[in-house]
Image (cartoon, rainbow, N blue to C red; front, side, top):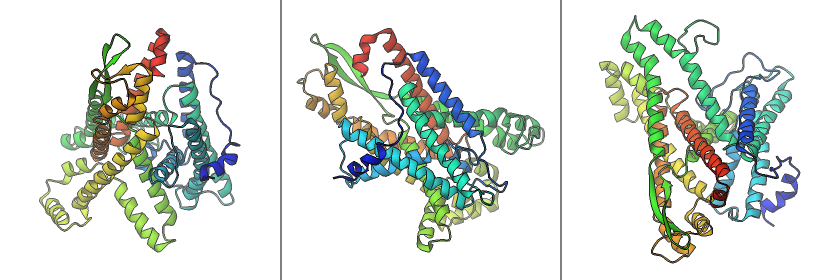
Length: 470
């Protein structure tokens, strides 16, 4: 008996969002999606009862990407959900767990164990936040705080199921996009800071900040206030352009051989490699905090990894502000030459390591994801064959289609995953609003949501097309 089968009696007891008995119309799916997003924002503004005012969030760069808000019901966000997926993917990819995800029964086992693991990790991460100082419960309120934070993450897990079955797209993607979009709008247009002061600089109201400071120092006002907005737009347009790049594979359909093309997008795996990579980095930071000062050897390893996977935010802005100072420039050259993590030179070395590690992890997760999501050449070949499509000039055999797809999909997967990793890493260094990675994820999520909406609308207008899309 396998490990997954042994856990089956346990995860079958877990509550489950029942799949709809009939296909939901588009307007109702949009209604459910909007309702879930509203609940997410309400949870993000509902503070945990029993916290001290000393609670501190030291994961500011990762909060948006984890769809979390420290001190609220979504303190740990989607971290446990994504980490559970990462762990199982690594176990399957390493051959430790034997599982054929093309088999519906075994894929159901995977989903059940993933849900069980995500629930367990919700309690583990809530405990880690509460005992390491990220949250500071009042005396006697530790268990109550852990319970609230854990249940908040579990609720996100079930809201994700609601979106996938009754709404549009993915709940995880919806939460990330909502958090990033809210952060960008607030950072640009907010006229107040947390203390309620009008047009204060501390990262809020960049437009107000620019108009206030432009009379004092035009260059500094531009770099500090407008440059993040410009970088945000640049990342946005680069991602939109990359989303439109694709390779067309000629196909024919039906007995008459009606011509057509099957597009394989450059960003074939979308933004999932970045989501999984950043979630992994966030959990490294959390676990580094958990073992801090407790297990010396493990503490050294985890703290070193955590220092690398947290990117130096706003490095490009800092270079523009200080890089022309001869003294700082000399120190920067020396630290780079001697490989010392000191000053701007150390930040540059840190940035290079961060981009390399992020790119490698994106490629690995990209390869795992196409197999997990049924997007590999063999699965796509079977789908095309069932839809009556074949490659002109070849036999109508899925093995032939697979041979043709093998020339494109594996290469596109590696190139696309590496591209999103490099783009996310470089964008993170610009100080773009919502973080560069957050913008990349949000644009990709919204783009996929638009495609899903267009497909659903087309299927409602022409029901026969549903056979091809299914």
